[in-house]
Length: 123
Image (cartoon, one colour):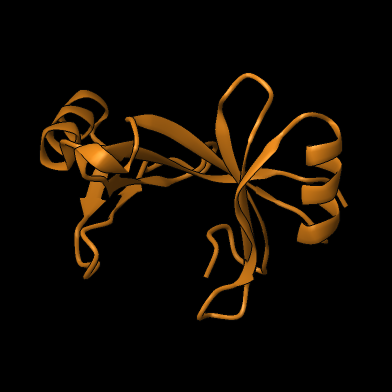
């Protein structure tokens, strides 16, 4: 099994501004029915992957793009990432929907998530 990038999200302190920017620029569709303010983004094309906008407060970090990579064993991949120089931000944990996820920061300082699940988005 490969380890595909299946989802992306933009962490932002300005979710409404970026939602308007990307929907006007690329004709992407946005859904904002999430209680936490998450806005799912549908890019409208089968060739790409969909993503979302995650609102953060200024004290919660910095704006960035985060990739989600599906793996068959989260703990094993986290250990391998650490051995290769990554830092764990969120250790492996089971999500309410039953999927497992962890977030690490690569040696260059870029965070990404690894998850085990059936869908393209951790659940």
